[in-house]
Image (cartoon, rainbow, N blue to C red; front, side, top):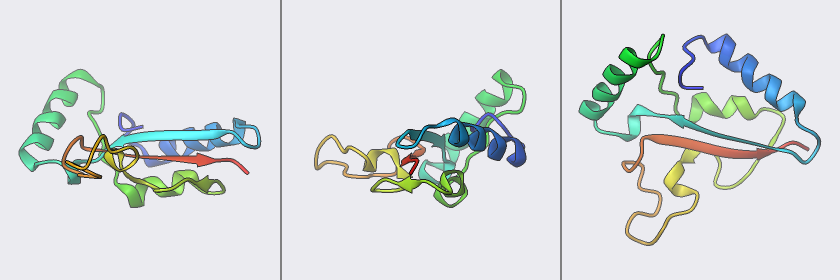
Length: 109
């Protein structure tokens, strides 16, 4: 999703996926999020992607990603940095500076 700059297109893509799921099916999303990484690193990432993909990369945070799960049961811990899902150990439980990605899993009722 982070390779699509048009918000309407992104909403349409996730709506198509949600609608195609059977009851009890899951939607899993991970998405680039620059607020969780150093600004210099974020600029470097944007520069690389602007050279390798047509429209570059769009960073969407938890608030922008959450509506893509509308009508679904969002599983704990919700839309959070991916490290918060399954921390490897106590050295960085949920440390958002590790990857620069947020993610979520939701179940269709």
